Amino acid sequence: MNEKSAIREALDKYDIKMAEFARAEEIPLRTLHNWCYGVRKPAKYLERWCIEHIEKYAKEKAAK
Picture 1 (cartoon, rainbow, N blue to C red):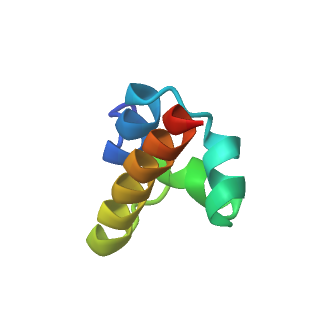
Picture 2 (cartoon, rainbow, N blue to C red; picture 1 turned 120 degrees about the horizontal axis):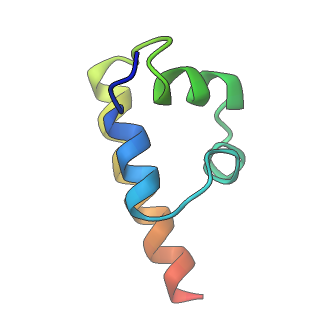
């Protein structure tokens, strides 16, 4: 449970708050929190989707 998830690493890399991303993508905050802190593990396709959307969100945020 101490190991950082790939989703958490992506959020940290782009300095995006978990609540901010959850709200933007309409993901329940508790679900995202559980994925980030290893309480639950998302399916691989959801993990990839989140990481892709974190990167996309970061680019859009930087362009503003």
